Image (cartoon, rainbow, N blue to C red; front, side, top):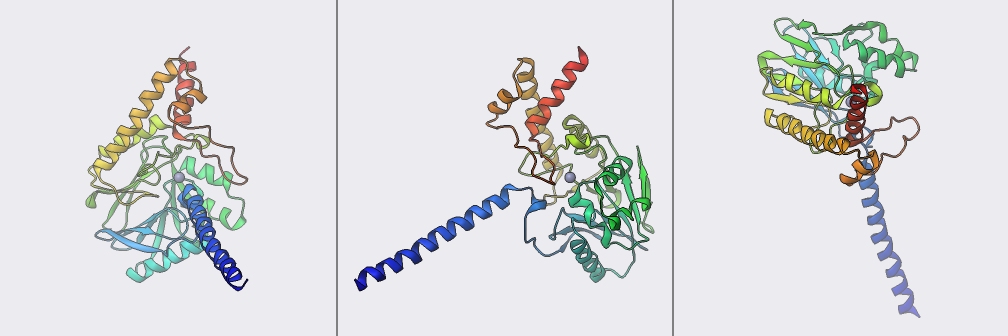
Length: 311
Ligand SMILES: [Zn+2]
């Protein structure tokens, strides 16, 4: 009897351990299946030195951000996803430079790049593409966030050159890609660019059709970026990348586009096209979140649209 009870107890402890571990693994898997910006318990904010006075901001909630320190002032690239993370980022920057943070450049309008805007001083200068401001105007409901909208200076093509006191930063627009308002922040002297979400590593790039993004545009924009004198490519959700990484992403993307083009020409349905990539249609969006279409679906729709336009 006693032995049985002990055995029972051992069994209970054992199964709790096994199932507990399984549940934890499942939870971790679920978290990893989500886009990085929705994962919980982010790593603390840390500045990674990229070049002389240029840093990538890792950790916190939302996408990687950037810091460019000039001779007189500091530009921050992207604003993290929460006020708390953005505030921690500003605190970390203060630890490495006493210069004022005077300008914020937004690479595009996604929440994980802009929602922390309220941590910035009220008199901050903000640069964004005009489409980005438009999407932020649509998305911002909170009065505290909306208060920053009038401060956003925009441009539609080309882009301004910004002088941080002896340090030149170019804000460039090459057309719709991840969204219709992506800008590239280029520091020619150091051969560094901040790409926002124009580059992804180890996964398909995200193209937001609901923000007029375009996969063929993405190829064109990345080719334009490669035409610049750049060696280091920083982005929202990957480690720093090289020219070969960008070329590799373009090649993979073009191969996918070519394969889907053949399938569309053969009259394949979306379902059949997805199937040939071992995919199913993306489930409908969860409440309060956009529906992230997979890249195959995006390309199929783009090709169908251009087929119909021609006819
Ligand atoms: Zn994005």
